[in-house]
Amino acid sequence: MRNRVLVLTGGGDCPGLNAVIRGVVRRSARERNWEILGSYEAFNGVLREPMELIELNKEKVSGIHVKGGTIIGTTNKGGPFAWPVKNRDGSWAAVDRSEELLRKLQYQNIDAVINIGGDGSQTISQRLFEMGLNIIGVPKTIDNDLAGTDFTFGFQTAVEIATAALDKLVTTAASHNRVMILEVMGRDAGWIALHTAVAGGAEICLIPEIPYDVEKVLKRIHERIELGRGFVNIVIAEGALPKDGTSVFREADEVGYKNKRLGGVGIMLMEQLKELDAELDIRVSILGHLQRGGAPNSFDRILATQFGVKAFEMVLERKFGEMVAYRHPKIVSVPLKEAIQHYNIIKPDDQMLHTARGLGMSFGD
Ligand code: F6P
Image 1 (tube, rainbow, N blue to C red):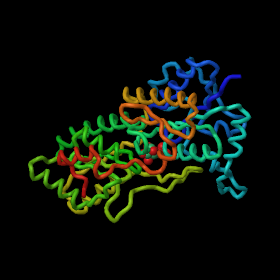
Image 2 (image 1 turned 180 degrees about the vertical axis):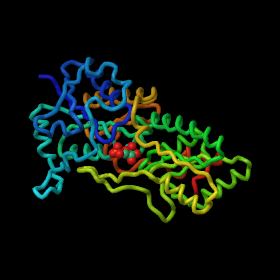
Image 3 (image 1 turned 90 degrees about the vertical axis):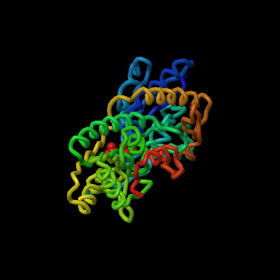
Image 4 (image 1 turned 90 degrees about the horizontal axis):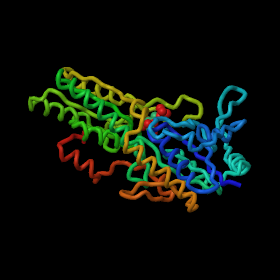
């Protein structure tokens, strides 16, 4: 009988997911007796009746590494520990189906699972590992906030998209003598904002790790104007927040979706600034999901491919309960526990933060 590995993608989509899948399948094809299956929309494919599992072979994954999204679908709702079930009165309850999931996997003769996802997905991986499942994690997120790895795949593509957007805003800022605010993703960590601000040459960068003082942001704007440069570019992460304030979000309003929906802090900043100086000409652009879609850049294709090949090799070595990680210049494995213990946030001694401050960039602190 052939050994069976189940691959799944969970959480928000991210450029590079397909490249990981292809890496797993192609590496497995070099060994005898291995079969790779994909579960549609993370574990939903296993838990649904009838099951939605698809065979992943070399033909199926041919050329997919250049494409965005995921050929096996994804979800950031529910999951095996909190499966949404509708009550008679129309309300929703979360049911734990993890034991059933393990039984179903056993029944399908699944020897190992490769779970490609961010912190939410890897927390599920760890819990299933503790229940006895042979599982390996692959770190994905454009936010780059998973610990244990130098980079997650998808991050560099998001920075490239955000930098292209910032470059465009700079020309408008310069032509109109305006303050242009670009809001990028980054829920708990400001990596996309920081790297974009350095790449594009922004004057101000606001991130969740450093709550901003609006008076200080305004001071920096006035300094620029006094220098005879009438325009200012600000990059702000969606999770940024003012001192003594909170981030801007809507409560989750979709069934099974637990995250707060961030977005709009750029508009709040504009209003705060206008309140202090009504003469400022300010415009806000919110990049949103544009930075998560489309094809991965070459860095992310390569990193994701390396992750895929390594993940399958970890199955061969039976390194379960571990996650693939990039520790320059090596692709290694780290315990899942380590990766989900805390977020990878920007620390005060971070090298890129140091570079940005060295350029004279303000963080509103
Ligand atoms: O975790 C990645 C991320 O892109 C966050 O930066 C953002 O807040 C979130 O996903 C948005 O997710 P959704 O697609 O569910 O709106």
